[in-house]
Length: 223
Image (cartoon, rainbow, N blue to C red):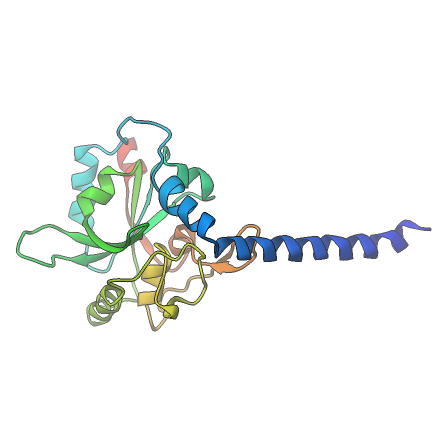
């Protein structure tokens, strides 16, 4: 038996194992245990009780550059969720502007509690790194449509199965801006989830699309 006759069966066994492994993980994502693990363990635990490195100066610098329709990607290096998600960024929000007379810049996000609208300040001071992205292909009229579509997800639950179809009613943080971009002006190339192989839109995928970086707190710190 030559090596060339052994290789095809080994490849077949590896592909069969990968398919079985992926199918098991996809089934696990739809179980009660997995959902509770995501909601109450991964989403809540931090590996440090210290505050993040976001300072007032860096926050003000970011706030002055933030505009309606900007995408905000953040990282909390001490969060358990960050250790479970590969990449440079682990959370994403969409700036929806001033929604009342308080003068507070608000962002839409998906968390374990579902769709929510939070002040940019809260998002920033819960992160060790904040990056603001702006899509040059979104004009002001289209941005209004994107924000309206985004806010239509009010009441939606966080999709712990990371279903690639956002029209099923539920979504996740980095999928929210992409789903609101109905004309797909954001040229996002979805990643493949580790283990399951299904398509997912990660915060890093948003950052790698046709966007401009208008603020990066890590670079602000270096000034």
